[in-house]
Image (cartoon, rainbow, N blue to C red):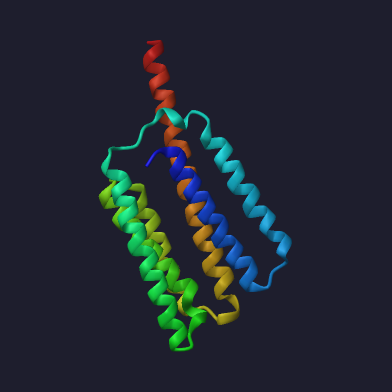
Length: 172
């Protein structure tokens, strides 16, 4: 998966997590403009110059498709199970945990060590299981969004650093 695709996916899902937090917490709907602006800013910052870094190999697409499919299936099964036991209020924490586990698999399969940190931080969705229900959406949704934005920012910083290193080698 190329850097641009990674940034696009991370920022889209960060925005979706923030949207869920705003929507489900009953916050002012206009607040969603801030996460959208942040995602666009991250994309614009990281887009330029990131195209020179190719994907890590042909296996990356297969790894992403496999683990994303498993992730989606796990989310659907979990949502149905929670609905069945009348605990749909736990879906956001459960989703954060599932997405975190998904990142561990991506970290191993791609490999991308940064995704171990992303997965670990998303497992903090466990906290959402004990947060009062009226605060759960905001805590889990905004936390997951921040983790994904931080991951995108780390990628941007690494790409810029690598580009600067390559540029200094060319000049030497």
